[in-house]
Structure formats: structure tokens, C-alpha cells
Image (cartoon, rainbow, N blue to C red; front, side, top):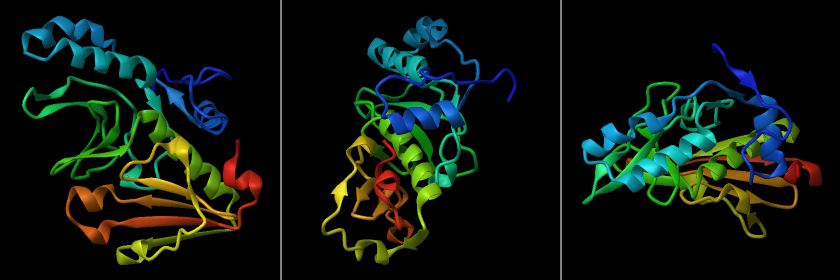
Length: 220
């Protein structure tokens, strides 16, 4: 990855949890990213609203060029976070590309009208309420995978059979279609994006990280 550089302590985007900041600064790289301001006039001439261009620029300033380890679902997520020309219309709404896929998948990673991070294939499916939430979920998966005594993966109808009584939803991941849950000694990640987006319930997936102590449960 030419001209990439590592993050220094304190250089991760502000507002993340301590766990996520550590993840970004320890395992992330940032490569030079295009300044989307250079495209503003051309995009305006093509009928893209100024507010959507501003949205893309804001995403690029905060997240553009950041490469993180693969996600445990969605074939790893975006290879590098990068915005591009907004897509859509006034009638159907606008989405902003969030970065190219690592592998060939039937959807693109996009940013929604309220800043949601999600996938767009047959239709738009917001996974997390923000890109911060997506990054928090990556950090939590990396942390839990390191400290868990067991990792169990289940798919399809078995996901709906999970007993989450007594679990609390992990708020920092800002889960929408995808959620994380914290129990007394385990964390559960539930991935429903592909199942909802393609009406494919067999694609539901859950990862259960067991045998965690207090540090393993939170890492904050």
C-alpha cells in the first residue's frame, strides 16, 4: 500500500471509544486520499445537490483513506474507506459510496442520508447509524475474538433462536440492522444485512464470543 502511514497515538477520528481508537491507531493505515472539493463544480453541473456534496466531503475528511483489518462479515467490508460521487435522485434519495469492496459481492458499501453506514444491492440496508458505529463493531469483533475462550458461529433460523434474555445491547456500535449484545460472560454479534437486503433468511449469521471476563466484555 504505497505511501500509507500508520496512525500516531491520539490521531484516530475523535469521538470513538478508547477501544476503537486503539484499534484504529494500532491496526489501521491511512493512505493519501483525493480531496473531493476539486470535484464540487463538476458535480453541481451534473445536478448533484450541494448538500450531498458537502456530505461526501465531510465523510472524506473524517474517514477517507483509512484501511482497517477485514470485518468478520460482508466479505470483510470496504478495502479502504473513501467517498465518491453521490448517487441517487431527489425522488429516490441520495447515497454516498463508502469504499470499494475487498472481494466481489452483490452490493456496495454506502453512506445514507442521515450518515448511516450500510449496503446497497437490491435495496438500501443501513447496518449502523454511522460509520463510527461500523468502526466500533470492527474494533469490538477484533477485541472479542482475541479474548474469547470460544467463538461459535450460527446461521439461518438458529439465529432467531438465540436466548438474549439478560443481555444488553452494545450502544457504541449504533446497531440498526446489525446489532451487538453483551451478557455476563459473552458477546453476541448478529448480522442481518444480507438476509434483509436480498430476502434471504438463510444469510442471517451470529457470532458468539464466550468465556469473557470484565475486560473481555468491554475493553474500555
